[in-house]
Length: 137
Image (tube, rainbow, N blue to C red; front, side, top):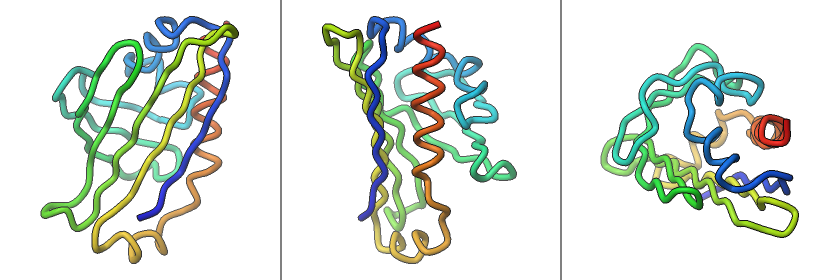
């Protein structure tokens, strides 16, 4: 297993941040995501195109949608050969919102796929920074 994490303090209420996180059009501008097809809803299947790999769509299922605190996207290969689980967490603070995003990759093919994957750290930072800018605007 391997994972990527990012955390930001956002000077906005969790509900404001949540509204951006669950709006495909808002996510597709200035956050490292090129476009999202589908509706972000419990159990929904969406496709995500990212700047990291613009020619490839990543199909995921919205596994958890607990407004305005937690959302989980899951995707991967059949039979659990490779799995990605991205968790978005929002916690209210005196400053506004503590935002945390983590993606864990697991499965028997994870070591092989990791070698061919780019480092997602810059992509995670761009997402969190874009979310912060939008929510604080």
